[in-house]
Length: 402
Image (cartoon, rainbow, N blue to C red; front, side):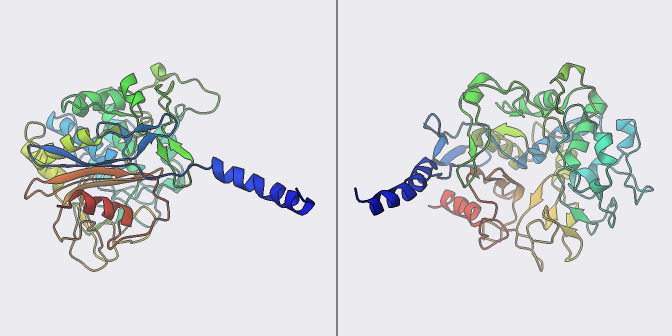
């Protein structure tokens, strides 16, 4: 080989090898449609685990992100029906210590406000609280609070700030009121009664779930979450550095963030559709009519200047919100919350984390709905016609194609 060619080959070979080692990531997509009686998988595409080459199935569990909030709210409403919790009681009474916004100490914080993102809390201090730290310690950080906006009242024009940290507070209240750890409480209250093979942060799932998990990959090919290689995590929670994973010593109510009530639910689309069916039936056999009405009744509506999304800006994504349950297709200036594009108001919740976008939506009029996820969506993914991503809109459109 001529010297010039050898030099060129030496320069190009490392780049070629690096390119060859970079996996080509194709989205994994599962969509299941349902009505009040039946469930139909309509899109089941992609490789759930690149290590093994296993194709995805509609029964495979995936970390479903913020739809977890809606399922957590179902646990709250079951405790309301049992008389254990009251949506409008000061949660300080349950926690055993005063929870107050530093700038608005006269305003009590309630479960109704927490579930509808109207507390004045933000994610500025982070919502991942490791074992060994307490919720009370984290909420003492001034960055956890919006200094300009305090807890609201009973008015739909109150300030809304979509905040993950609200849900570790909710989970702590549930634990303090019952004396049970959140992961076990959710199995007892929601997952087992509905016959679901699901769990928060893998606690309560079995080895079969680990064998069939959907590994989450980012758009650049890197592993984001749940590359389990067939084994459940030895410790299902985040632990302070240097501390043991000693959950036996944990006192319920001290740190509701441990099992990720805001985003840590692992569930298949078949089972998520069963939750959708229950909601489409008005909670029949699971929630009282009063609790179901409280769950779905809007607590906040966007009026142009009374709320922001997770990014801290009004983005037209959240415009009507109930108790951990979003209404879509809001008619109003600045609202772009209709990923279906048909003007029909649906109820449910979206999810976004680690390259995944997901949705559980149903039409309360017809009872028809969809449960879906798609992966490897970049953080800066293009928007569609609505404030949702084009990737989400494409899944919805394909799932409803005749």
